[in-house]
Image (cartoon, rainbow, N blue to C red; front, top):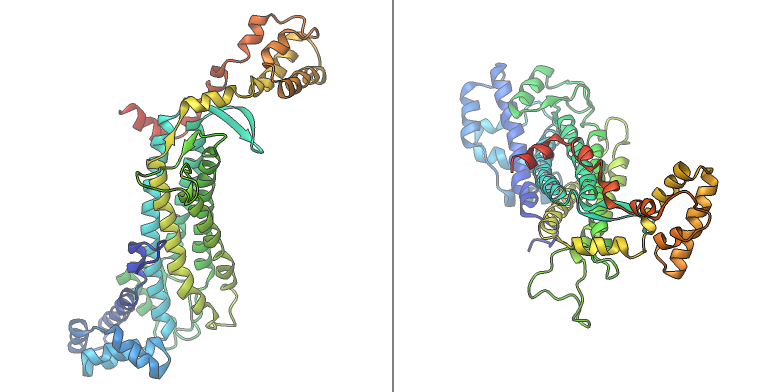
Length: 438
C-alpha cells in the first residue's frame, strides 16, 4: 500500500526496477562507447544490446551473498547475456554507474515536481487576477494594518512560487552531469573520451572534475531548493489556515460532502489539508541538514552519504510532489468570502485608515509629524477602547481645525489603497495577457 503522502509518479521513479533500469542505461551506453572506440567487438556489442536484462529478485539473491548491490546487478545482467557479458562494466567502478544513473533519476523526479508546481503557479495566477480588486484587511503581526486586496495577497505567493520554479529548473541543469572517471577520478581504466560519449548518449553534461563520485554540493542544492519550495507552500497554507479561523472566515479550504471535522463536534470545519502541508514542510526541510552534511566525505569518497540518499531522495521528492498536489486541490476549491472581507475591514470602525489620517493631518493642518501622530494615535486608542468610529472621534477633536468633515470622510475611501494594484499586476505580463484575452 502506498503511504498517503507518496505519489505514484515519484514512487515509480524510485522503484528498484527503474533504478536498475537506469543503471543498465549507463552500462549499455558504456558498451556502445567502448565499441565505437574499437575496444569491444561488434558482435559482442550486438549481443549485449539485444540480450541485456536483469531480474530484481536475482539481484537481491546475489546481493545476499556479495553484500554489494552493483556487483549483484552486473552479475545478474551478465547472466542474461552469456559469453559477451564479460564486457559489461568494462573499465568502470560502481560509482561511475550509480552516480551517473542517479543524475537521470533525480532529473526525472525534478521534472515531475517542477511540472506540478507549474500547474499550481498557473492556478494561483488565475485566482489572483480573479480577486485583484477584492478588498480585505492587511495584517502585520496578526493585527489589522492597512487595506489590501485578496488578489494582491495571492500575487505575492504567485511570485514566490515562480522563483522556486526558476531555482529548481536551474538546479536541474547543474545536476544533470555524469562521471566515468574511475576509483579516484584519474580515468585510469576509462579515458575521458569514453565518459564524454556516454554522457552524450544519456543526455548529460560531463562533471569536469570528480573523485570516485559526483560531489554532493550539487545534490545538496536540490534538497535545499526543495526545502525552500516547501516553505513557500507552507506559507500559503498557513495564510489560508489563519483566514479560516472562526473569527476571520475570509477564505476556507474545500470541505467535501460527507466530510467530518470532529468526532465530538459536528460543526467543525478544520483546515486539515493546509495543516498537513505545514507539517510536511517541517519534514521536508529536515532533509536539508543531512543533504548538507553529505558534502564533506573522506578524501576521494566514503559511503556515509549512500544510506542517507536511499531514504532522502525518494522521500523528499514524494513530499514536495504531494504537497504541491494538495495545494492545487486547496486553491482550486478555495471558498472565498469577499463580503466577509469587507465586513472585517469595518470591524475596527475605521482604524485601518489611521495611516492616511496621519499624513492628511501633516499636509492640511500645518503641524509637525509628532503632533499629527499624537492626534491620530489618541483617537485611534479611543476607537479601540470605546468602540466609537474613528471618523466621529476625529470630527469632534478640537485640535483638528482646518479639515472639514467631508475631507475627513474622504480619508476612509478604500479606492485610495487600490490605485496601484493594476501597476503591480502589470509586472507580470503573462497574467495581464491572460486577463485581456478572456
